[in-house]
Length: 518
Image 1 (cartoon, rainbow, N blue to C red):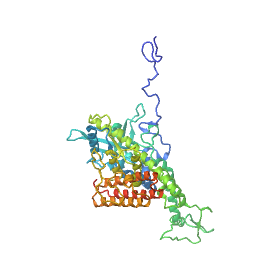
Image 2 (cartoon, rainbow, N blue to C red; image 1 turned 60 degrees about the vertical axis):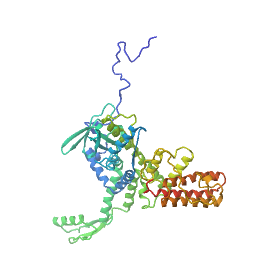
Image 3 (tube, one colour; image 1 turned 135 degrees about the vertical axis):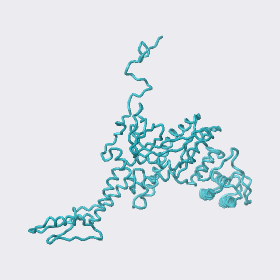
Image 4 (cartoon, rainbow, N blue to C red; image 1 turned 180 degrees about the vertical axis):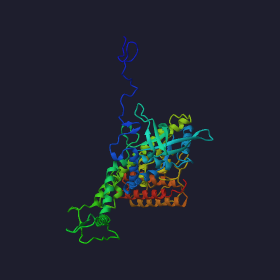
């Protein structure tokens, strides 16, 4: 039986006007003319050369500056890590190569690069040029990541069939320079229709900033004019005043200010009185605070005003910081996607270094680590056998979360046996499990002995007679074993709570000894 493809003519050719499935039919709909993006509808922000000057002025605003500092500071304080794509020696070599090029590059600071690229949040996009140099090992290394100023934008290259711009053209000192997008790292924030300029946070803050700025100017003028009162001069009827007298009077009224030089000389017959604009009294400071509040809401940063204003509850503050933390994590994911897609594969490609799975750049979650919650979470996961405490990679990650120095951990069993400690009454010091170690004890006697046992471990670590990792492991084991003791009716809930608090305090003390090389 012969089948016929309706899309193919008898002579083997396809009918005209009917595209194949591997070609784009529609366009994203970006409004771009002669390389200029025409998506902006507000005249005050057109063209781009005018908009970028307004954005720079907005960045100098105290409230907006505090907003972006609250975003950038925790991100810059969070460390980076490089994860290998496999376990082979080639993968480990690739990690070392990438670490030297990015995190430990002698030509530029990685933190400075991150700080420069974080401007994509405020402006809408950020660009960095990738520059290579050949070194003595015969490989092409990253020489620099040059930040490109957004105010130097002249026009974009024509979009390709998928709506992606092909180049960036800048004008600096009357000279035009063009670079293909493959040569650049391109960070973009919320760009619709594949807009390469994105839509930064400053764009959505323009309206509240504009009103706040003008209200602050009016408030200052009001203070100078005694909060809204304007001087009014009444001319006496039947008196003819010369033009020179009227000009002097007008200048005196215009220069009337509430300052140390407050005075006015009036021609004869002229009466001076204050004039208020009406019976309504507006609290300009309150209105300004409302606009400031809207600005902080743009990035869930309301918590910046807690304590300075009589608003907000502890629950509200907790919810706001939760959303703020999620927003920070979203920013990290956007930036990591650019580095892992536009930088790392490009670097290995230029070195003809073929890897099935190249290493990836990671960024730890911003914020202080809650040691007690971390210890309890890992203890529960170990107790449930969901993770292996002997996994060197896991232990290295935990050390990074706790801010401890890195250590090359061997692949063999990493939990060492504890060094001998002084014997305690009723305690089997040779047992690894707390449930059997304290087999002959119950109730308050059990609690007192465990507390004394934890103090003994802490004392041994602080004296240097026991490794800190062994001490943490010993104390952590107590938490899961005490749960079993409660199930076996050997402890009450209150006694279990006392032991749990002591376990947490003991772990906190040992972790604080972070200057010890484990």
